Structures are given as structure tokens and as C-alpha cells.
Length: 248
Image 1 (tube, rainbow, N blue to C red):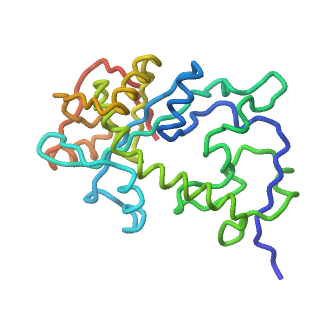
Image 2: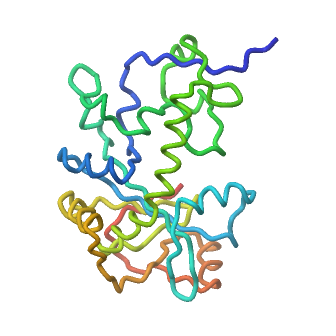
Image 3: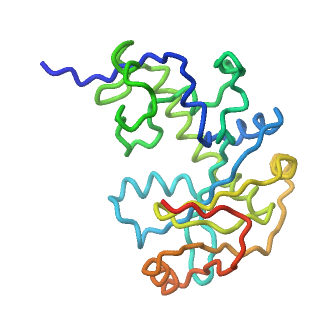
């Protein structure tokens, strides 16, 4: 009988702690900033009219977003707050161990499990060395086997939903309101650490900052650009921008 179980035994190589942005919950973002570390803001937008996948996937993504006005239309905007570990995680010690292990973010506790229920766990898509998949306990078959891991995944998904409005409000308070189109590109901002922390503190204190910033979409693909313009969306036409436009 074929064994379809996925095994995993971390060898502490630390490769997953380098060269990436670490998605954080809103509370984890506060803690990350308070430790003196930098956080990136990733903005994407989408609507159902251009969604290529089945309804369940749209519903999952829509729960992570907030309706915002763009031109003559409404779109769902999703803000991802991510710890900057593009060189390496600032919490990684010289000994290659996590310096905040007991307080590490949920996404680190969950790794290598996928958060998105529509993305299959595939060891070939992970950066871990091959040997870590050849030993350890089975943690995934057709479902998550470990109840602790299952709970952490659900907590992470729920945090995405619970934090959606707050993260968009924080972005608006900082004047960050240009998103890329989902699955086409990402708009990545690298805001000042103190300013981002202050915006979060203001939100926590109930100080809602009204903003006149209109939400706009940045897209370079001519066909998609024409489609979004026809739908009445406002596009970002500036020659110089305050974000990184990363095409997918």
C-alpha cells in the first residue's frame, strides 16, 4: 500500500529564515516593530469579475480583504504586513537558532505547512534540503495530522480575516493606497518603522484618521490594464512611485 504521508524533521539549517518576507498578524507586527525590526507592506487588489478560479478560492481570498473604492468601481484590497528578512531574519542568532523561539510568529510555527487551503503541500516547492523529508513523524496526509499544527494553521487563517480591516485602515492612515492586481504583481512598500508603529498605535487607540487618498491600481500588462480601465478602476499613472512593483 502506497504511503502518501509527508514527513518532516527540521535540521536547523536556517535556510527558511533567509531571503524572504515573513507574513505577520497585526499583533506580531507590533512586536516585530517594537523589537526595532523593519516591516514591509504588500498590497494587492482583485474583484470577482476577473477571478479565474473556482468560487471557493475567491471566497477564501475575499475574507482576507476589504471593499475599497477605486474610481467608479469597488475592489477587494488585501494588505499583508511582513517582517523584513530579505537578507536574513533579524531574530536569527549567530548560532543559527531563533532568538525569539517561544514568541516566534505563527507562520514560522506552521512552516512548512501551507496556510492557503487551496495550495497543496509539495516538498519539491520548498527550499529545505531533501533529507528533512525523509525522516520524522508524518504530519500531513490528506489533512494535517498534528492537532497542534492544525490549530495553528486555523489561528493564522482566522487572524487574516480578523485583521483585514485594521491593516487597510493603517495603510490609509499612512497614505498607502496603491495596490497591484492579485496574481499579476505585488506592490511592496517599505515604510518608516516608527511611522508604521505610530499608525498601529493610533488604530489601537480608536483614532481613525480620515483620508482623501483614492485607491488606485498599478498594472503594466496592456490587456489587463485595458480591462480594468473599462471597468472604471482608477490606475496609478505616476512615473515615479514610492513602492516596489514586483511582477509575478
